[in-house]
Amino acid sequence: MKKLDMLYEGKAKRVYNTDVEDVLIVDYKDDATAFNGLKKGTIVGKGVINNKMSNHVFRLLEKEGVPTHYIEELSDRETAVKKVAIVPLEVIVRNVSAGSFAKKLGMEEGIRFIAPTLEFSYKDDALGDPMINDYYAIAIGVATREEIDIISKYAFKVNDVLCKYFAGIGIELIDYKIEFGRYKGQIILADEISPDTCRLWDIVTHEKLDKDRFRRDLGNVEDAYQEVFKRLGIN
Ligand code: TMP
Image (cartoon, rainbow, N blue to C red; front, side, top):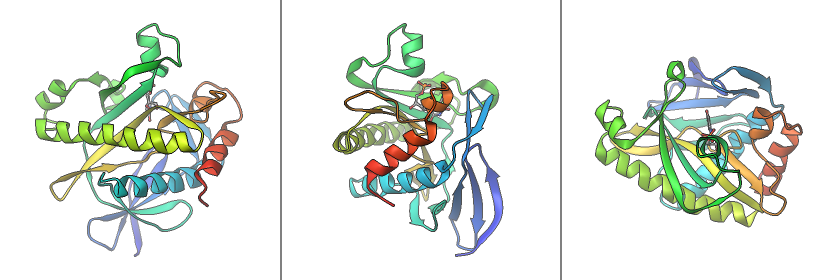
């Protein structure tokens, strides 16, 4: 497969066209941003870890019946993926209070919920990704009721699979953000699942092993990403 011209450069990834129809190559960078790009930095080695972790998790999810865009890992930082049309929703699932949820509800972080939550943000940088509900999404035409129902079903399936998987490697899955795309008439999981897009806490010490270390200037950012990578047992 030949890597052709760059199609898109995001905050953490570059996406390239290829000579194969409906196949793109994603190239993961070490660049990190937070607060809608206001805070900028580098997390050395992040691109390699996020690429390999996301691929590992997507392969696991495929086995468990969640269709994904993953095709093949091409190198440390590059992966071939199906070319989807992204549904412009950030789909967020939470198991434990943290981040914007804790702030909004005046709740301390670390309280386990009675049941997981599901929320949507409309992907629009100029608006700061506002939180919307399913009716807003349908009203403005970003997804149909059928698509929202499939997305919700997969979002909770991802939660079941990943909570168990991470618990097995001593990590508590606090919350995460996923994205979906349309591919040949189907909804499939796209984008990435990594310490950039999840809150991952050590199950015993509750130490933060994710991008909150960068967002909140907690230090040892690279160490946290390396620790998660080590526990995944991949290389
Ligand atoms: P929040 O508590 O800030 O709303 O974040 C919820 C989850 O979504 C958390 O795991 C971090 C992830 N997330 C992203 O992946 N991208 C983003 O731009 C934001 C704000 C959060």
